Image (cartoon, rainbow, N blue to C red; front, side, top):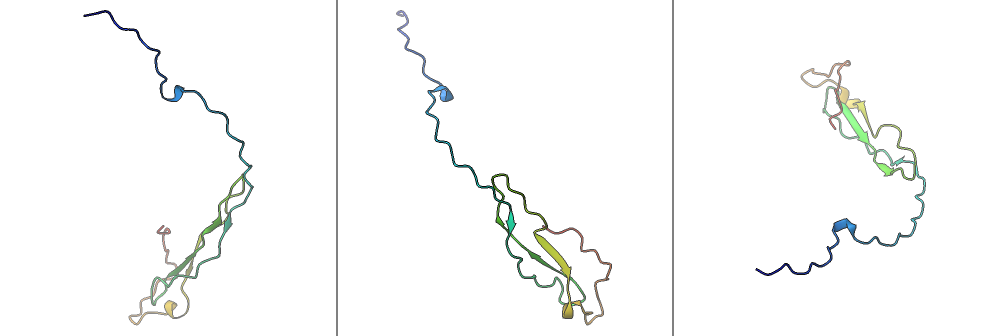
Length: 106
């Protein structure tokens, strides 16, 4: 075996390479508060007779940015059915007035 050869300079490792020039400063983000869009139509009643629930929702139209405020208020609503849907079913069944719909299924 002969003597070891000359060693070159060690290579640069990963993120230890030379740094680039700083980029241009970005434009400031415009302050915008959250805004909801319009309410959807009410969904059909959860029952065709004997009571039930309807639901509608609204989507965020503008997301808050630049330190703007978050949307205030719910993005959905529930209400009890009215009219024909609220009348007793042919078998006489009806959802009691004190019925709890439970947690929102979403």
